[in-house]
Amino acid sequence: MKFLSLAWVVAAATGAISSSVVPRAGIPTKFSWTSTGPLISAKHDGRGIRGVKDPSVVHYDNKYHVFASTVRETGSSLVYLSFTDWSQAQQATFHYLDAKGVGYRAAPQVFHMASQNLWYLIYHDGGAAYSTNPDISNPAGWSAPKHFYSSMPALIKKTLGDGSWVDMWVICDDADCHLFSTGDNGHLYRAQTSIADFPRGMGEPVIALKDSKFALFEASNVYNIGGSYLLIVEAAGSLDGYRYLRSWTSDSLSGQWKSLASTEQNPFAGYANVKFSGPAWTRCFSHGEAVRTNVDQTMTIKPCGIEYLYQGVDPGERGDYNNAAWKLALLKQVGC
View (cartoon, rainbow, N blue to C red):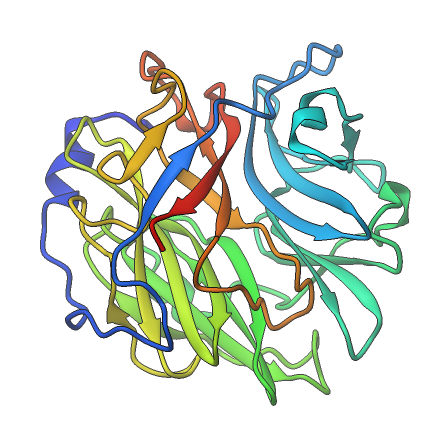
């Protein structure tokens, strides 16, 4: 997959299908950010890692816990690191989570399932996978992969086309846990099961949101803000196809998603609304996640003062998206 191409520009220029801006529960209608320089990048440790991407992050027990995908020619696996301050991030030990069997794994999401007193790591490995661990700080404690489905669900198989089923995300309300995913095809999928049954019993997905392929591409994340919900999905922009993040709101996880900051000129995060403390080291604002201090399955964050860990790449980078030298940096919300 090429991440810089004219095809992305043409596809991303099509109009969104979703409804007009409706602010919810104090969620801003416009976002502004400052960005750090790269904080986490590949280590030269003999594993042939070229980049670090797809971060998931919580602040728990006075530490930042970061899970991410690694980029290398032989495929992707997961890495874990922890530290007390962002200035220590690059020096933190990389724990590679492939001890339970080497295989493709990417796009992690971590949270604590309060009713089970277990940490969950959600990721894709060709399917929708998860592992559990009673102790987030023990990288050797993760269980072997299990799957929400025994095979690709029928609706996804029917509608996927030339896309890929990727980037799973779990969020729970008072009654149910919802599994969101994307298809690299303009479809946002959602399935659900009861909190009591989770992770078993995940139902047949529905299409929760639909747009043109590159305008609603991948890397969805969903947060609870004051009882309403904020959805973020990655798109490709008109500037050589560089990635940016769009957003929507809804009153419920199974409800209609309404456009919020969802254009290239007014994105959730993109080159139009991010300022750098130094030189602009990237034009890509790609797959990321809000730093959560509430670490449970509700994915609750505050509407102001958001910090968002994202992946970027040098503007001179060309070639395969999956083999690029991605680095992680932190956005800090301003003007809220």
